[in-house]
Length: 225
Image 1 (cartoon, one colour):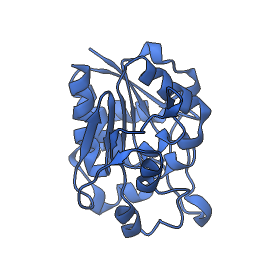
Image 2 (spheres, helix red, strand yellow):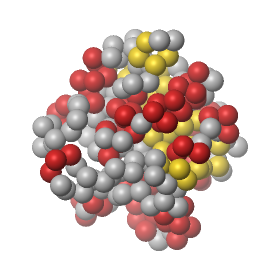
Image 3 (cartoon, one colour):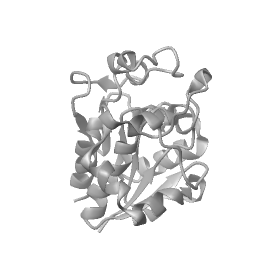
Image 4 (tube, one colour):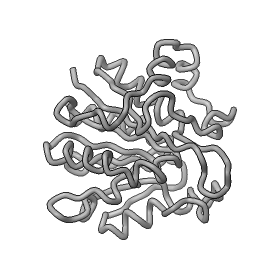
C-alpha cells in the first residue's frame, strides 16, 4: 500500500474582509476516505500543525456530501484532523505521493510557503505524484522544475475565474487561480462551473473545484497503481 501526504491550510482569515476561511471540508473528506478505504497510509499535515481551520461555508446545509456525513460520525478521523503534523517535519522520501486540498486558505499560506514549495519540488523531482484540487493548484505558483514554472506546458485545471465570480471573491483573493496558471504557461482547461473535472499530465494531477475532489483522488490512486 502507498503512503500519501495530505496537506491542508492553516490560514483562517479571508483577506481583508475579516471573515473566516480555511480548507473546504469536502476536499478533505472525499480524498481521505478514498485513500483510507483503499488501505493507503495517510498522513495529514498543515503549516502550523494541530487542528486546521474548516471554512464554515463548506459546512453549510447546501454543501453536505456523503463523505462529510461519514466524517461527522467518525471519531477516529476527527482525531486525525485535530492533530495534523507540521508540514516542516515532512520529507518527500517518506511518502509515495502528495495531495493538496483546497478552499481559499491555501492561497495565503501554502502558495507562498517555502517549506511547501520545496516539498512539492522534492516529490516532483523524485517522479512521485503531486495532486491539488480547487484553489490548491495555486500552491504551484512558485514551484519550479528545471528552472521553469512546474506547470509550464502542462495540461492543468483549478478553480475558474467564473466560479470565483459566483462566490463574489474575485476582488478578495490575492490572485485568481485560472489567471495564474495561464500566466505561468500552463495549458489551462475547464468545464462549466461546479462540474467535476480532473486532469493528469505526467505525474501532476489537478482538479477544478470541490466536486473534483473525488476524481482527483481516484486519478492519484491510478498513478500509484
